[in-house]
Amino acid sequence: MGSALMAASFCLPAHAAGQNTVTVKSTRDPVDKSYRKMIRGMERFERERAFAPNATLRFQLLPRLPSTDMRGITLRIAGDTVSVPVPVDENNFFVLPRHAQALQEDAAVLASRKTASMTWRARIETPGLPDGTRRLGDLRLECRVGKEAGLVSNSSPLFGWISDALNTPEGVCTSPDGNYLFFAERPIFAVTLRAGERVETLPFNMLYAGGEQTPDMLPFCDCQVLLDRTYYVPLWDASWPDDTLVEFEYMVDAPAGVAP
Image 1 (cartoon, helix red, strand yellow):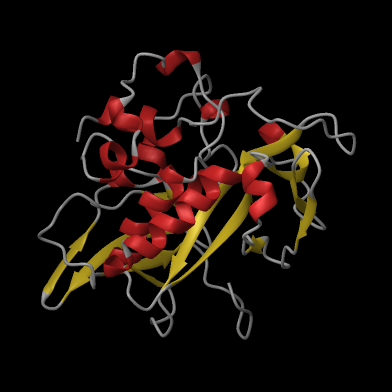
Image 2: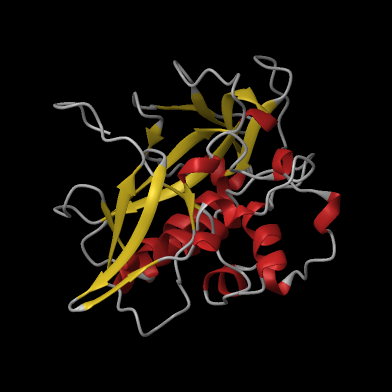
């Protein structure tokens, strides 16, 4: 799978500092994303619904540091003249509204946390799946939307040699050397693919960010604090249909009656 390259590209961010167009006084070092890019991600979701015809799209904020307080996060779209609050639920999911003036002003999406403290992901889910599963087509589209939206954060000079071509949605989401890091709900013990009678457990090097994160690399990985929840899936392998179920065996079961 080109493991050295895989570890680099999954944990590397696409966001470059200094691109926001507004000055924010509420926090010294905000987590910011391009509103235009996130809207482009939403538009890609609509164009490529064939991967996940019945799914919905949300975005989610996830911690990067053990010290990150994920409670009470506020989010807004901020341009030169507009400031639009974005509701965030108790699990830090949100839906991004469309706003013509914010698009025109090349607004930023700002969260009330510091840049290195959180990462962002698209979350595409088909309703009605069994508990503890995801759908492969949902994950394929999640990768495309996430890369189009510019959500993966923080970059490392250690991996500056990675080609721009590999960092595109097509390069990342259709190549075994350009996979995309996903996060499970809880620490995972094993991940299995199931399509009809075909069943395959993913190898260890597709769990825990490839199992190759050194102390020097970990601060540059989205997985820094959620390493035991991370996994890759063979998005590029067309022999696994979009309806393939991705089944999780967690290290510890959820308490009875408590949703993950």
